[in-house]
Each structure stands twice: as structure tokens, then as C-alpha cells.
Image (tube, rainbow, N blue to C red; front, side):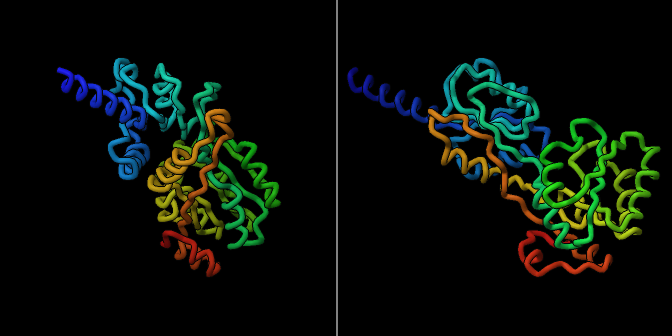
Length: 287
């Protein structure tokens, strides 16, 4: 009987320690970037990582045990993670909502405007104006964009193009040789009607377009700084390995910096622009 009791105590202690080392990842499985990032996290952390898809995680599971960490990918995932009764640190990414919960630390993944503008001016130093289209106020130019533009001595010409009938008139601005285009990750712009018209007008007027994905670079953008699931998983893992102390948690918002540069060398060549050798060497993808 004593032997059985000892075995049970050891097993219980082991299970408790294992639970304390778990990393719960809350995410929406219908968003490819989130699902792919989860796969990369599993490859790095193995069985410690517990997938918690939103809509499939029960309240009883959340109350069953306390993980060591939680990661929330997106606002919906963060709301589910905050339902945990445990005072465990939560690392949030792709969070737009304001939260004052002391458990939450944020990883900021907004586009690296300083890098974008520095690269743009390396390619075409005469640029002085940036056309910035958007459809909803969520993607209107914010302080970080305006600050980066001011530091680069660029003027941002923001224009809401939610009405397709206004697009032809807006594209006439490309006649200005000092104009370039910065595309935000606004879903309202990511349709063939807008993109086909944009890239055709840009090519005819020799206007450089800055994208945010390899897909846009493949379609005709001059370049983009791209966040991959592997790089995002690495950034999250680095925070888990070297977190702030309990006394200073959550600490300041962390900034994502593992951007991959994709360049459309073909488009730049047709526009008569030469890509500096160091930019070519730093690019992860060339088209």
C-alpha cells in the first residue's frame, strides 16, 4: 500500500510540474498565419505547447490547471485567454483592443516604416511624397507612420478610397515623379479591382509601390518587409526564454524586428532603377 501511495505521489507531482511548464496558445484556426505560427511554435517547444483554438476550448479546461505561459494570437484569442482564472503571464500579438489587465504583455508587429522609407530612398532618392490609401479608419495613418515619414522628410498623402468610383481620380496623382505608394495591410484594398488598377497605373507612371507581403511583391510592388510564421514564432520564443522579472511584468511593449526583405528586381529593372548590392544581399526573396 505504501509503495502504491508513493508511486501515486510521484506521478501526481510529475503531472503538476508538467502542467506548470505548459504554454497554452489561444488562436483562431481559420486564420492561416495563426495556424502556421502555431506549427512553428510546436516545432520549437514540443509537448509543452498546448493548442487552444478559440471556440473549442471549454471553461472546464481553462479551470483544470494553470499553465506557465499563455500566448494569444489576435483580439478574439486574448479575450478567451483572459477568461483563465489563473494569474499567469499572457503574451499577446495582433492585438488592436486596449487592455489594462496586468497579465498581458504585447508584441507589436506593425509595419517597419523606418525600414520601408530608408529602403525607398536608397532606390529612388528623389521621392518626397507618399500616397497612402486606406478604406477604414482602423488603417488610417497613425502617429508612428507620420513620425517615420517626418524623420525621412517625406510627406504622407493619405486618402480614403472606400468608394471605387474615386479610384481613377486618385491614381492621377501618380503623374508626380516624386510620388511613391505605401500599401497598408487593409483587407478592403486586397482585391483584384483595386490592385490591378494600382499596379497598372504605377507601372505606366514609373511609381514605386511598397507592399507588405511576398504576394504583393510578386504582383508588382517594388519591395516589402515580410513577417513569416517562422520569424514570429522565433520572436515569441525569445520573449518566453528571457522574460521580464515578476516584479517588472508586463514591462514595455516589445517590438517585432525579424522582418524579411522581398524585392522585385524585375520591376525595378524595367523602371530603370538599380538595386544596391547590399540590399540584394540582404533580401530573402528576389522576384
